[in-house]
Amino acid sequence: MTWPTARHPERMLRDGFNVAFLALAAVATLGYLASDAEFLRYPGLMLLAGYLLTVSGLSALARLLLLVAALITALAWYQDALNWTTFLAAADRFAFFATFIVALGLLRIPAYRSRLVRHCGQAMLRQPPRQRYPILSAGSALFGIIINIGVLNLFATMIEKSNTLKAANNRAWVQKVRRRRMIMALLRGFSLAPLISPMGIGVAVILSSMPTLGWHELVPLAWGAALLIYLLGWSVDAVTGPQPTAATRASHQAPSLLPLVHFTLLMLAIVLLVFSLVWLLQIRLPIAALLGAPLAACAWLLWQNRGLKTHGVMPTTRILRRQLPWLLRPVGNEVVVLGVAGYIGVLTLFLIDVEASLHWLGFMLDWGVWNAVLAMLLVFGLAQVGINPILTVTLLASLLPQLAVPGLSEAAIGVALLTGWTLALMSSPLTASMLIMSRLSGVSSFLIGYVWNRLFLLLAVPMLAMWFVLADGWV
Image 1 (tube, rainbow, N blue to C red):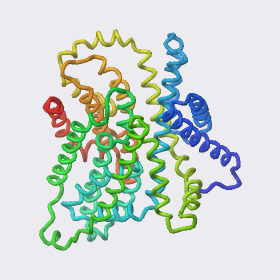
Image 2: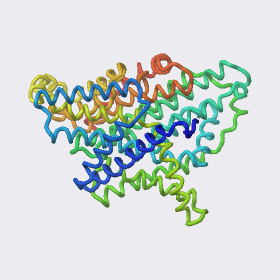
Image 3: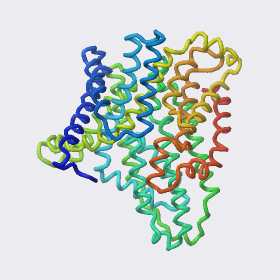
């Protein structure tokens, strides 16, 4: 880690302003979303603009997306499709996703300081071979609900530290096989987040694009699809992995999973807090998640510091003040990629002649629930060429319900889009999750997505297609 020095006072000042802009923009936006107070809306957008003007270290993809957003804005203005209301709707979506990253990211501060989290990680990694995949996959899915993409950094580092040549009894092939199996368990478990997490970015996109849909309507189809993916991944791992001998099984004593039980209870408490805010404040689930995550982070830190002076209040305040720059400085690419995708998705809807599009897509009225399969394949396929699922999902979630296809429910549309997103996270070499896994493991993202994962994908796509065709009528 490189600490700023007095040699770079301008950089320190710019970074300080940058972090302050993003933090204050998130606070203002959250206040506006929760209260509908217009006087908070414009300061939030102005602070976000200040953040974008001062952010540094953006990737080529993020800079390209900003350029595309500017070009689409200019095109919309040229075609008289852009008015102040339209622009504000698109800008609000950008601010929503930026706030989402900040609010959910706050949970990473107590998580990285938690002994419980470390004990859970070690307990999962030290399981016997046959139990390691289901436990690590389920654990990464649960951790992903709270710390989002941070679970990849946390667990991938643990995998590399624990999977030594000595631990494999100096057998290099065993070390390589363990790395492959643990990486796939981690990636597939994390990728289930769009389907299972009520606090995830996937659900936030769907519910904000389809305001008449409730999360409870998604659960039967979404959790069913997630269970099928989980069981298929477990089966593929069991079939393709080497079979341990009886002597190996006898000598490998599994550590206690009690820490994972405690963590599950913690996660359920956070989810319960979010749903309590929905009921008490009468707000939509995505907004409740934005409110609940910071509250849960502060409560978790207070509990960790409960034995210190002022009942942990002062230490918690100091930790947040010190760790906030650490948390917010590296998220520029995430803010830009997710925010611009949402911005472009909203703006594009105003550029498209919806009535003409619906007329052109009229042939889909006879396809019924197969439209959900097509939507899943579009999100999955376009992600392979670098089109962010947020953009695809935003467009399709806004367009498909307007077709009013007989036999196709909004829930089926939403879950199909989330399933395509899940498959994209598991396979596309161009997603942030795959790039992180590649960087931390030293393995090509193409190898992880297309070689290690090929049998799973060949089975998963037709299996999930049949799930939508058969299950939509049942639920």
